Length: 354
Ligand code: ZN
Ligand code: ZN
Figure 1 (cartoon, rainbow, N blue to C red):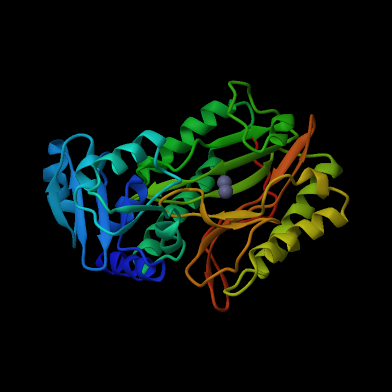
Figure 2 (cartoon, rainbow, N blue to C red; figure 1 turned 90 degrees about the horizontal axis):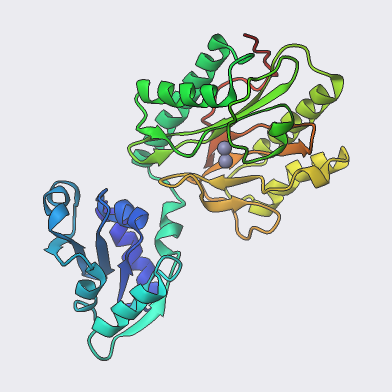
């Protein structure tokens, strides 16, 4: 934890900031270890202060490392502001207009507030070994849950029942819970990338897309597999094979130094060449860590290059409205030599019956 605040202090020096007020709770957790619901951290060159209210003082004493602890009132930004001096950054993408007002009203004269969002997020994009260990574990649990689904069957159960079952299985296997609302989408419903599970039973002879992730010590996993429920029409199989090859080709392009948009282009080019370019409406992937969607992004519009230690998804999909959809998603760690693939569940088309 201390190393993280030190790296942040280096970034602040580059931006000529004397301090950063960190108010986003995910960023606060990343820097301090605190998991409560009210806390603010201030980081400067030699400044490490964490403020929380009376409800969380005991918890903070247990969790927070490397920061001086202070108790504030319920509204912490006013208390934080009084400690500031010089050029001070704040997280503009997380602060409300009212919170910004409170910060500027309570700050001593001469304090210059500078919109500086994204600094902690930049650090978070590159994972350390501690973080990777938790993400690997979360990915393993998701793999086990897919095994469970295959043995338990899909046909005749409702999408909702399957979703409830698999979230229960995650918890039994040691996850804190799902990292997002599980997607179980069969038949034409599978054409909606963010489909909500319905009470309807899953039919035989179609495709079912199951997108799940779980959380271990705050860290997320994210994985999608598409299953067949018995014999399926040739068109479904052809789209499945297309998405699978696009996914595997894009995976092979993942390595430190690769341009984020170039990796997206590998999968997109393959799907476009097959005439389904219009049916792949989302980016290829996203970073995963304390949040299930974080940096870096793999998309046609994404700037920047992958770095060793990034954890990203590779998840092309083809969605044919009113008919069916296919998505295949792996979670990978970016290394100098290529991807370390954390999602181990097979990607061959598996038929799951009753
Ligand atoms: Zn997913
Ligand atoms: Zn995803």
